[in-house]
Length: 123
Image 1 (cartoon, rainbow, N blue to C red):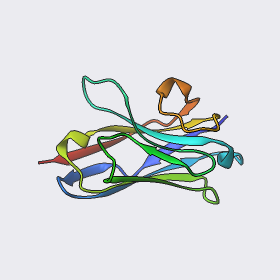
Image 2: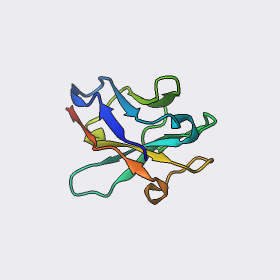
Image 3: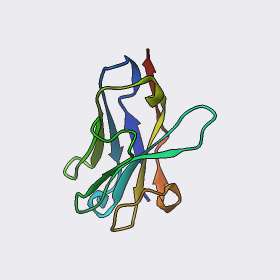
Image 4: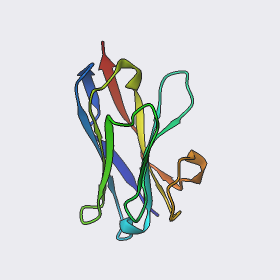
């Protein structure tokens, strides 16, 4: 069982930056692939970024070049650095963990989810 707790959301102006963090419980964090998803009001949850156990990363086209996912296995934490934020980035951001070895971009392949953190970007 893995428990995930996100932090770092908030209100920021367009063009600004935020760093989200997701702290995981347990001693097996390094054996999980981690992902970030987001869900805006009235829309389906969508993939944002993922990092595999080995450190490979993948990004949605909409955030490529602006967002960076990273993990610190010593701290059982995954981060999402978000720069050049746009109003369309406004959503609840969720952290998730998967036992899959390769990069996973499909939400149904993730086994554990955090409670989400709100990110609001004003224009």
